[in-house]
Amino acid sequence: MEESTGYESYGRFAGIYERLMADVPYDEWMERITELLAGADIDKGLCADLACGTGSITRRLADRGFDMIGIDLSDEMLQVAREKGPEEILYIRQDIREFELYGTVRAIVCACDSINYILEPEEVEQVFRLVNNYLDPGGMLVMDFHTPYYFSEVLAENTISDIDEDVALIWENEELDDGVHASCLTVFERQEKGLYSRFDEEHLQRGYSMEEMRTLAEKAGLRDVHFYDGYSAKAAGEKSERIVMTAREKGKQPA
Figure (cartoon, rainbow, N blue to C red):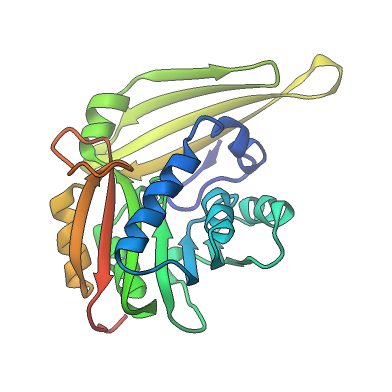
């Protein structure tokens, strides 16, 4: 099994990632992201997409007129993103816990619960410090994350399967110690002559509450922190599964 300690994930999985994410309503998410940015008078300029994966959000923001930088740790995911273009997008292989930019940007986004792969709260705080450092004055962060409620009550220790004629996914879930959730993925991918190849990965994530994220963001120097129930305008609550968080740059802190 290809074991991940959290953020170091998505190896062979990159090749089928977009196929398995086909039901994600990226266009609806994009409407909300651009609405939130517009509320901060941000509708153009440089924008960084942290843990961009295969670039589904990155490309859509580029289509909306932003000059995009996509950052991800997986060479495989970035290769897929580059192949999809456009060439104007700058993709960089970096760990978001220590990412570096050449200057500041108007906005930073981080979608698809990527921050949950960072298992240590102090490392999440470090991401926020870097975000605050690389945002323009008054710039905005838009980030989503899954909550402890989602991992303990929705995924719990359920087994989920997703099967079509080319790919079969078996997704086994387990609650570990200290709030960490393990997803053991087994993928069967159709090859030539009706044969299938199999590979396994383990993905580790931690659920974060609104209180935890607010504290970590504000310790890092971010301000005006708000939470929404998913990609809606509704305020997040105790049973929110995915929360969208926004925060603003309000002065620099040591990164």
